[in-house]
Amino acid sequence: MSKLASDTAMILAAGLGKRMRPLTVSQPKPLVRVAGKALIDHALDRLADAGIAQAVVNVHYLADALEAHVLARKSPRVSVSDERVQLLETGGGMLKALPQLPDPFFALNADNIWLDGPKSAFHDLSRRWDPEAMDALLLVVPHARAMNFAGSGDFHMDPMGRLSRRRPARIAPFIYTGIQLVSHRLLRDAPEGPFSTNLLWNRAMEEGRLYGISFTGLWFEVGTPQMIRPTEEALTGG
Image (cartoon, rainbow, N blue to C red; front, side):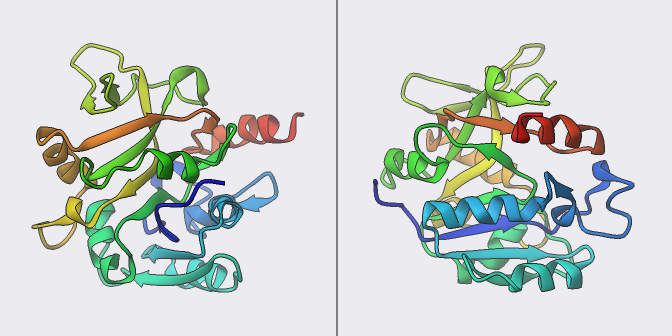
């Protein structure tokens, strides 16, 4: 099996989960169960299966419950990046956790569910990773492999793999899966406080250093309660 580019992943798990209400009134979204398993455990199990040894999980909303859940795991080993005082969004969350993260590191959303293709998503990203050329490498998926997704897409990708944003009044062929491989260089000169990773991606795009690879498996959007049952049916075959 090909070597992983990093042995550590950050799971972005601090959000308020508003789209998943009412299920998130009394529990954080990463603990919502799908096919008998908390959303975050789907992601953590994939990390363990790929051989990623360490996960850093950020917490904010109903943080005590989420922290207790993830720290009970043996594989991967989990440490927490505490955002109880202030929710820092995706970019700010990564910046706060940076002292716990090697260069490069994987980052993924806590509500990701996917079925790998011939190789794991993390091995696919690792094989394509070029630190001389890239600040971040995003795992993107074509519409045909994006289950429950009804949007217009996020990115165009040129023959070299460089990404650009969806153009106005157009459909973009690729959707961001929420999984990426990130260089510390992406986070250089980042602002203080809450900010979105989109800010960093925009700069990387301008510099020709934001890349993508097309996922060969199936990816499930699980953003609302209505998306849970069709995801469970696809995962269990019934």
